[in-house]
Image 1 (cartoon, rainbow, N blue to C red):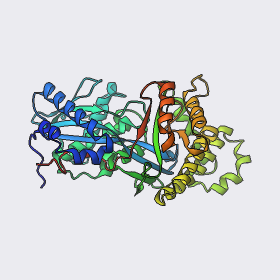
Image 2 (image 1 turned 90 degrees about the vertical axis):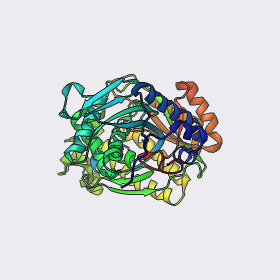
Image 3 (image 1 turned 30 degrees about the vertical axis):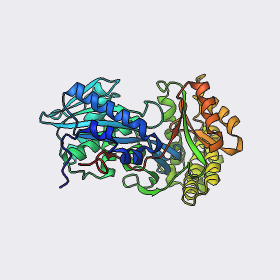
Image 4 (image 1 turned 135 degrees about the horizontal axis):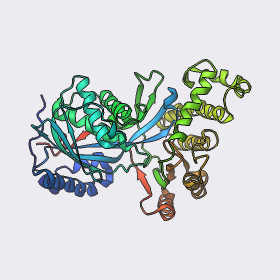
Length: 432
């Protein structure tokens, strides 16, 4: 059995550079800044809980590379974990409760003796914490008391799936503290999905949690949603002469629930009009041959969204092959096609009954700046929030400056692929 580190001198190890190799592995050239962040997290834990943390654990957010709104139709997705992560300082406690201090939410407490759904917690982080612990206990994994201090660099509403990162981090630390690091990534991902669906009261698939839990770049096929087929690949954008950027264009998600829900509803309506439940079960040629008949059963917008699904699902395989073969220009062209399809067919760039156009503005300005040398697309659910851009090396400085000037300092951030899912500092050079 691997014994956990017992109250390591984190401050000494971090200041002496003992952990530099691991931090470079996780964060690349951002590792020097992370030393200060880790020291702040240890200090905050000590100040609030009056003890030294036994573990420092991190889980990255995720970015969708191709496959916009395909997963809920049992389609394929290309996605990657990113180095913008959630960091937790943790230690075991004898009490049968979990205490989590997570600015800006304050202190969250969950009793291990009361893991039933609390309706008043829906939509709040304590629902996710309670739901993850309840799932692990239901699946006969060991749970126990602990104190947690959380430092997040996965902004809420940024399109990097802060909720999935939080869920996976919670499940992963229980795997480390109480289960000898033996809970599989797929189980950790399902714990997060369960918490979000049943406790947080938000329907979601498994893609976000699976990417956060697995790390790296993944092609995921949800043809059998209970047992998704996951294949890893390498996506080194810097080596290919590009930078992957995320631009937070702003806009509120608060009033967009119906707009999000309409997309899977309309796609499924097309599938049902053709005798199936989801579009993955429909032969594309059968769909195209029946467009005229479909117009009497569903809206034209639903037909366009279904067309996007079939084309986007094919693009995932094409994008995966381009990355595997190192054809970054080929990937750029596919990403551009994906972005134009989301705009024209999926129509998730702005809400229909709203003046919100921040995503459309970010895309338009990006295309002006990048021309045919780069690519951009809506990121995630759409309607508000973030776009993703593939920017050639020699245009990156100007692109970031222009988008920051338009949407605010820090709105445009470079993304890097995180090589692992959950990670415990001390596995490598700073162990012992």
